Image (cartoon, helix red, strand yellow):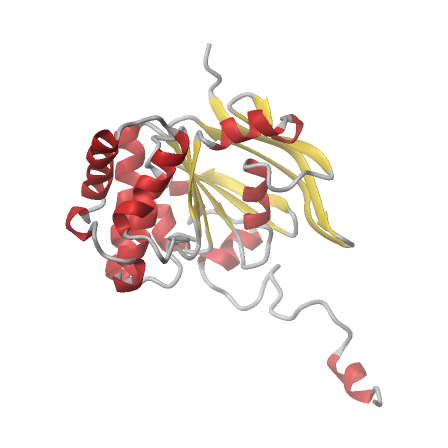
Length: 267
């Protein structure tokens, strides 16, 4: 019997030295859904993602992906699990000295025994899905920001993964490219029957395409709910985030001594 949740995060703690980033995260990612993890810059969203793929080991708690506790896997099992994941990085992460075609063909050549003829068909299929089949011979430096994100998205689905992770997929895009990427994420998730995690601070665009939302602040989940419920939330953090209010639980200043006190200190 297949578990209902593809990812389960339980009481996850993690610190960079003395700086505690995750302080007991609990969340689940149901199969076939798109889940957004929202929060301000620096709140630990990317750190959380690194636990999904085993790049980081928790100080306490666990991340379970497809029924396996990630930090308990040996190298062989971890690499096998990673092959079931697709990743779209913040800055696309394309190999700059490879063409668009070879960027997509690379994971297929590395992780499968497919013939070059089959790889060609699959590369063109993935590029066609993101509207860039005729850009296959271009180099990454010849792509616009929006095109590069679409190529990165095509590469993320190259091996038909069970889980696709999008780390800040909307950052730095113009409105047209942003809307295009958002709609592609929704359409591909439904067409491929995969599970998607969108980590972002772009509220308006993510709420159009996701099924469920988690808000992270100060190392814990402070609010969660279906996308349609978020705008009506009375939680102080959610209200500040949704309405972009300067005053609320999220302080603009990094924790420090009073300004007047700092000014009084002589060098």
